[in-house]
Image 1 (cartoon, rainbow, N blue to C red):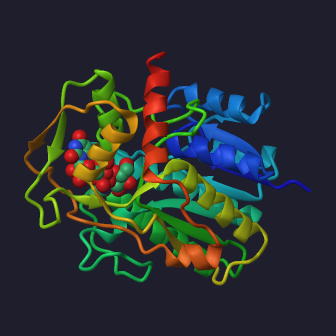
Image 2: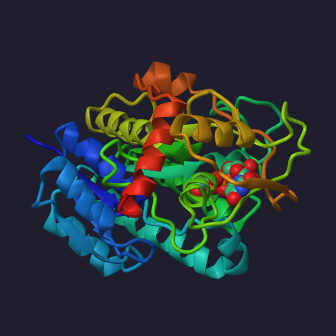
Amino acid sequence: MKKTVLVSGGAGFIGSHVTVELIGAGYDVVVADNFSNCDRTCYEGVKKITGRQDLPLEVMDFCDAAAVKALFGKYKIDAVIHFAAFKAVGESVEKPLMYYKNNLMSFLNVLETAQEKGCNVLFSSSATVYGEPDAVPVTEATPRKPATSPYGNTKTMCEDILRDAVKASNGKLKGILLRYFNPIGAHPSALIGELPRGVPNNLVPFITQTAIGKRECLNIFGNDYPTPDGTCQRDFIDIVDLARAHVYAVTRMIEGKMLEPCEVFNVGTGRPLSVMELVNAFEKVNGVKVPHKFAPRRAGDITAIWADPTKANTQMGWKATRTIEETLKAAWAWECHLAGK
Ligand code: UD1
């Protein structure tokens, strides 16, 4: 029988790509979102890509415990992937209580109900939990560092909450923590992608918006870092590769193939790329200019971080496959699609 996966925050950037891959792998998906940080573009795009015009959509807030209970009553859910959370680092520094309330409350509601129903939980964590690492690449055993923002802290706290809940559940609750590095790109169909509201905080949407003329100039924050070219280094992971990692993780949970009741995996390529290298690659592969200048360092930025993805490669059997050229082409195609070009 087909298994059903609930994707909270399923209309967002990562959630929509994950929904496409889950459906492609034969799962039924229930998308739930309160549209607080996205519109219906990606939900509609998912329906087009998958041909699933009947894709269930529940417009709801995961901070509403009664609504979460009702949702789990309405569908027989085998696993839940929890994305529904605020994610802007700077905003979290200004509005910490809003971040703690939203990100913790929604996850607690999901966990309480999932535990009651004996449903598997996949939490979307982040490489932010490693802070400024003492050595790169980072493995899952690399010690976490104190978070540098309330946003980052909600990731660390949710990891701990899931671990504790799994431990206390006597096998009733199983969980996987996926630590994402820097997800970028868009679906090759250019029907779904990243849709930041206002001025983008993240690098790639800023690049694509500058290339298309929506922004005048990209500021490259810092060229005096102790890296080969002076700009920060990251592990940029293609969004479709990242989405596929969720299918592997969910299948592993549902089929009872986990080695521990709460597992953690890095989801990255293992390939460091500097900000400057990324900008150059974007210009080259797409044949467009990205006006840019060097600007002072951005507060809270990490010098260099990339994943050692060996554990996900060997234990889950997942590996990133898309080249940076494919990824940057897809990001540009999406921006052009949005601009109607
Ligand atoms: C941040 C978060 C991370 C989150 C990710 C995706 C932290 C420390 N980081 O990662 O948790 O998962 O966003 O939402 O919490 N840059 C520029 N110019 C720009 C924008 C960015 O030079 O206009 C540079 C940054 O200085 C950085 C790199 O590009 O060196 C990547 O920045 P960004 O895309 O914002 O991601 P992170 O800060 O790595």
